[in-house]
Image (cartoon, rainbow, N blue to C red):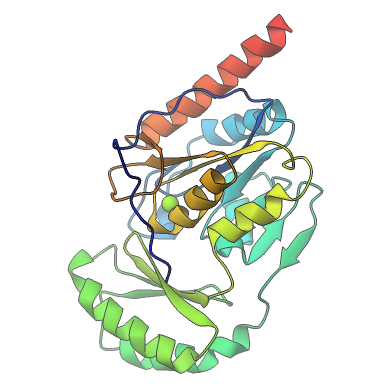
Length: 264
Ligand SMILES: [Mg+2]
């Protein structure tokens, strides 16, 4: 997988509040908008989150998208905003502003031999949990972080079974076997070629190693990366301490945008 050079100079700074009519905003979900839970299914989405996202989408004239490792269907179940622009599974599934869905990888059978090998290996590794996303296989070890070494060995075997065209992507207590054609940076770039994102400055908020691709892409397009949480190193130029600060920053962005609209 690609490695990223840490931002040189000062450590990431708190982000300023940008003008909502100038930016396109991309936001990760887990560890950024909501706190982690023991499993991806047991996260707690508080009642105010969908309203905040709806308001951001409106104030940014639609130039707002979710970039997540979760599957598109799972994101819709969590947020109840089935019209929102979304890159699911790191961009393997893209929903545009008009609601058009593009699947960049659509052949779950290609992972069948890796799937079979994992079924056998996981019978001996009760601390690991397999999430079968169809076109990607995620190995979670959040319930037992000490199982990381075993997870890595198991993931290496799965990668060898999958063969060329696949790679391992390390996230927060998860190793994912996925197509090497997909990452959040490419997803961000793809959405930036389309209205209403086109012509705006991209900002990306995320917490995980997988978000580094999108930070790097946003910054290479003249925008900003904002890392949420304490993970370092990061290429992001800006940082917010945790989910609460990220939510507070997004709320401030909506207030500034409303004031600006009121003054115009
Ligand atoms: Mg995350």
